[in-house]
Amino acid sequence: MFTSFDNIGLIKVLNFLESHESEYLSGQDLSDILKISRVAVWKHIKKIRSLGYVIESKQKRGYKFVSATDKLLPWEISKNLETKFIGKRIYYFDEINSTQNFALELATKNNENGTVVIAEKQVDGRGRLKRKWYSPDGGLWFSIIIKPEFEISNATIIPLASSLALCLAIEKIHKIKVNVKWPNDITIDGKKVAGMLVDASIQANNIENFVLGVGINFKINTSQMEKNLKDGSNFYGVTSLFKIQDKVNKKKLFNQFLIELEYVLDNLTKRKKNEIIKKWSNRTDMFEKRVKINTNKGIISGHAKKIDDEGALIIKTKSGNERIFVGDVSLG
Image 1 (cartoon, one colour):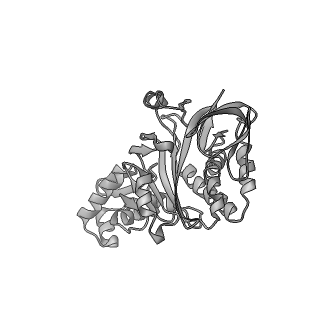
Image 2 (cartoon, rainbow, N blue to C red):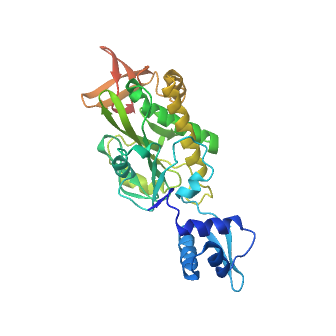
Image 3 (cartoon, rainbow, N blue to C red):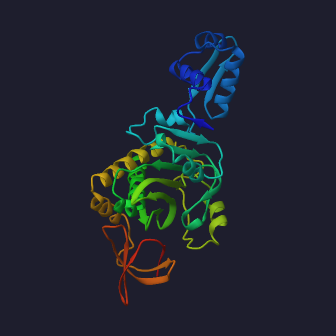
């Protein structure tokens, strides 16, 4: 595990190399300047390379920084992050059972507002309605802890606001057209490219905190993922933002999402939820189409009409309008 708040020797070596990227630095130079042994310098550079950084070395000249990693390491994210509180504390794992479970354990602590938990891979990822979330290498798998200032009546808007934030980030950074599928899936050409999960802690009619789990198929093997998911309930296809061989870094999208999320949550604090609902509604193609909603009360069929001001999906059925807050939507 790496964090954004531990000043470890590895980061000192990395920062010094990066700030002198046009020149070679000898092991002795690094040892003298950073006040660590040459053995420690060598061990840190070995670890830095294992994290995906390219460090060139030449006999009698030393080490030179060549290129950065594409891993979402805490110091790489926080370097140019333009947010007020989201992402100021980061926990990074190469592999974890579930970022959501780890974040839920942290959420009760006072200093973890805006904290992000990231993993390159999850072995027991969790999706909505207790489903397993397949989380291989190449995706963005993370959870964010939020201690909101807005009223509890806005709790049901959180999934819409979060998925809207991701749409805005994808559109701005990668110029890719995406849609939303109620309540919080992101799709491309009708196939799922990202999904979200919200776990909230509510006490005395107040939201103490909520943990937003996010999974983005950034650059993954979709055929392998389909094999793992095709027999599951409500499967409607998966896709990836990019192909595995594409040379594209995850960091820009990740950072932009944190910025957009902070913005939409600020809108909730300022009671601008109608603006969020409008922008979300402009990115779905389900309205006026016949749908089936699998709810805990059974299947409800009808025509999707709109999202109301509490985030409920309004379905026009034979017996009148139904307000749905939780369920799986399929067309037809």
